[in-house]
Length: 119
Image (cartoon, rainbow, N blue to C red; front, side, top):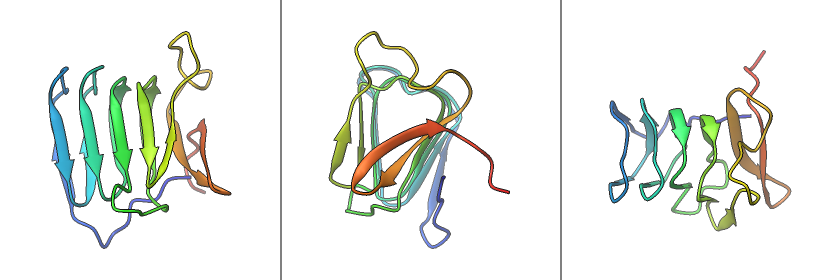
């Protein structure tokens, strides 16, 4: 499941983010590159990372529980969606077997699943 609300503006970042770099945007964020450990992305909408997500991402930062996060490889330091926070299990492995992964809120909790294209 992934929602990219069409009522919010969207910014495209065409580069990887290194440690110490921050993106803070009132809308959706699409990153064509990696978000490395020590980098941070905060968006009021959803976040798509076409690459590896190893840093911190906060989608729905203004309280939007419909926001989602998707990445080709999801090994973040921390994920936040609205007021919900989670981190990966110890070992730093991808949270699912392989392929793109998505994080969203279901029943008041952050759920991380293998991404499946809508039918």
